[in-house]
Image 1 (cartoon, rainbow, N blue to C red):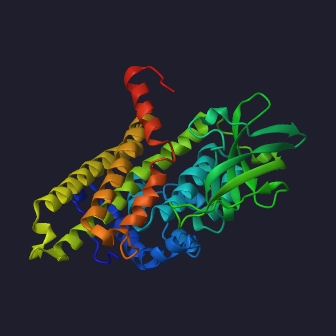
Image 2: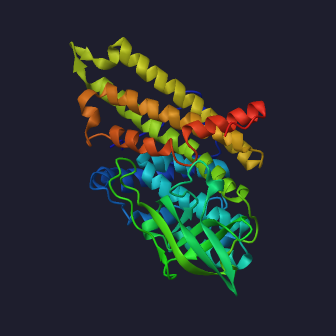
Image 3: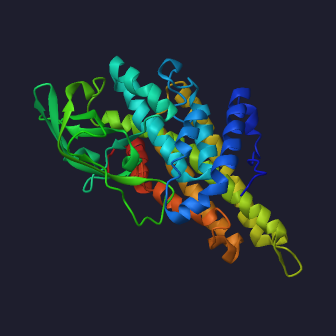
Length: 390
């Protein structure tokens, strides 16, 4: 794996980063090279999640890095969060998914919409990885249309009775808590914190995936689960609440995809310089140079896009449509670079000796989850024209 990794920086974007940003990048990069890269191919081949990495992700501050220090986070800015996601996803999209879900889909809603009691009870333990969370929005029949969800709860004294199911839930098989979105008697969507061990709450694992094989995916099943009313997030209700969480996660993905693209580009470049055909390295051939030049161009554009989006996020000015543009563009960019890089390697590109095929398969999930490629297109179309095409 790429122990000598240095990220391409053709436009001197490092000049836009603070010393703290570069330190965070270097420390996260070193952790990925030490703890993720040497083992990830084996775990992907076995379709097993390397659960021993949870504690280490907590130690490097990958869980809720922008959460205030008083709740166990590092109090970092949004660019720092993005850089960490970039470096972790260079290792593997599934490991980044684990960190993204914990940060943006579990800690973020508890921090933004939770009560003081909820924040103090859950956030510090989530920050260290002592407890892990998942996020329940997508249902078997409601993916791109989450407002159609049928998961619901009814009041019963100091509790509510929750029924329904969710699927394609990262971290669900081992999660200690789930932030679940369901409708009350008035069809209003609320977030509830459901804890492992509550009667009627089960989390069956999803098997036979060709993508995100080193990530743990499952369902959430609620069969008359009794949840205390104090576990309802009081700060915000309606579909806008989970969509705010998805905005944070999608922003992180825009950076993470750059990490994948960098890794594939780096692999293809090194291979092309070493692979001799017709008496010279294939890097000397025009068609290989075309591939590499286009990869570098697209990575550079994506770097500038996510950096500027991070600045807007820091100023609390980033819109959902701006985040959609970056998520959609950067994941599409990464998947195309993975496919081109695979061709540079020829037959070797399909083996587990290199990271490219694993990245390519992982990105087939990333381009679909947290808003599909087409849905983000329509979010932009709505923003441009004022007409909702959904």
